[in-house]
Image (cartoon, rainbow, N blue to C red; front, side, top):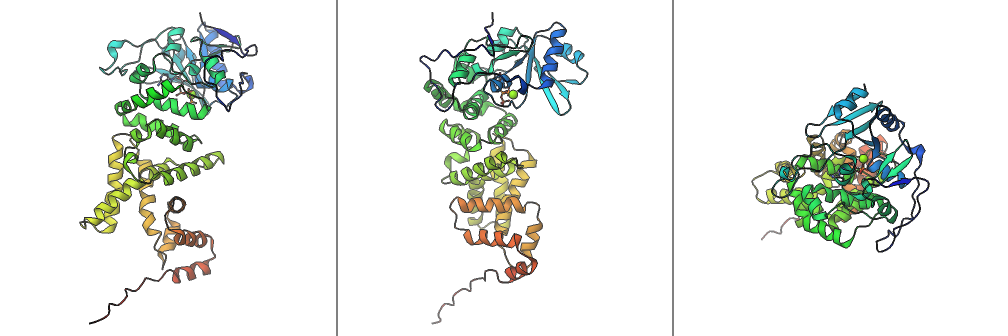
Length: 430
Ligand code: ATP
Ligand code: MG
């Protein structure tokens, strides 16, 4: 029997013996106005047809914490076909475990049938879940979710939050992130849960127990089993949410960052550039400005690019421009088998790298051409990051800062008065 807690009647409890987040005050009220009308329509229609239907997961968690949910998920005992029949504006998606997307204008509500415990026979030898496509009961559905605070259900008809594990609400109030079941086992089933742990810790400002922290570090290698396309999706969730810098620090602390970007484990001094790139991405997200993952990938792989380029240049088999192209190719090639970065991001990232050298050419027509390049802005921003992370390139940064907003006459004079090539000192004759 699930434990029901009336939203307004919930009282503080369950503090003893647990870790309490320092920065967050207990705050368990659910603001009904923040619930998506579309999501409410979906659960109402399903219940009217005699099905069980709840809001579930991150949306309930975030509502209880007074945060605005990113999206709304619904769990029900109706099958995908039954759901699809009820909503004209719906589409069944997925092959293994089908879910239904119900569309209301730009909003999509994801409706999933209760999922059951997977059959251990359908795990790999390492315990990794291969097939996860069994329908189940409400209770089973809650126990196969990842964290206790993600296994909370909102029943709109009684305005009640259901906490089938009995731990979700107390954990939420204590600011504690805890896996349902044995962490090592749950990480084996799906290693992406480690990345989710870090993401939620940062996003919610929750704490994990020392034992869970140790389990993550011990299981970090399992990330190698995850298909690169899925890790790419997770990487976006980790770094495009406005808390990229804090997430990066946490990923490093739990030994996960080097599993996603292995070259970072061996590079000497890339951390400052990466931190600067992440901080600037976070600032842009907060200001509502557009951000592109290409910029971050350019930062993550910059040192790898430089190392390859220096090696290719030193080998003297390549002209400098070819060495740069080859190095860009190699830097991405090494990465694709772990986190596959689609061309729409890897190509702009390469362009940012290749423009770095061109930014040093400040005479004649070249700077004007560069200003017109669609990647100029990103390349210039990247140049500033390199300076901020300690490279001695102040002069060229200042030059471009002035040049791009100068009047045409000044611009022309700047390109004529650019840095003169140093003459080689004449060696004294015999
Ligand atoms: P957010 O949307 O803020 O990133 P979320 O908790 O809603 O957080 P989703 O990826 O939208 O995350 O997943 C919705 C719910 O599905 C989760 O709250 C959780 O209950 C369940 N879930 C998602 N991924 C997993 C997983 N890998 N293992 C177990 N349960 C999961
Ligand atoms: Mg969600």
